[in-house]
Length: 206
Image (cartoon, rainbow, N blue to C red; front, top):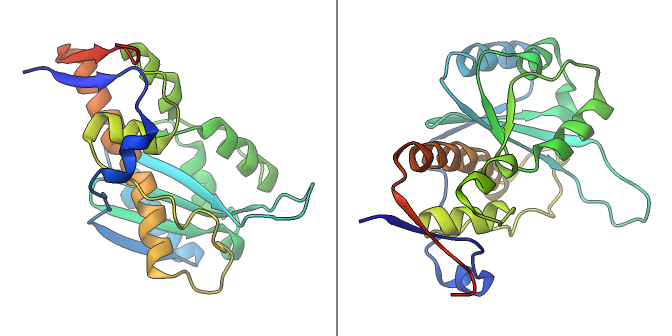
């Protein structure tokens, strides 16, 4: 039986879906030595999910720098606290790496923000928004895409919290890890559907 995906997913249906959370290990990175070990591990993986978090600004015209870079394999998510660590040599090595595909969503915006923090050559990054169109899906948000492809809900409750806090809460860590990990899951499922053709696209107006 072919998987049903929708050209546009009805946002009203998301609230009733079961919530999905990253179930792997979450590691907070605060020093360059920790970053070096984390990046060594990450660059040994076949594919990675990436995302960033920035402390929200409620003043017009003020934009804060990226506070957190989260990078996830299927099993482990590393949270690099850029507001404390900066773009260290190991993080720069990660951002410039061409060997491992790193999957993000609306990643062009994240890259622009990261470039304002440090100079680096952009490595091998893939934006899901550039690829979901290939199967006819028009949704662009992570929440809608995950609901569409997996029938589960990603909560956005922690998005506007303080990402520059001295210590991140467990809820913040789980939120950040889930977003990065979800990019891996979506990419792998998208590749599977493209290769097998094992899906049926339903027009939103049908």
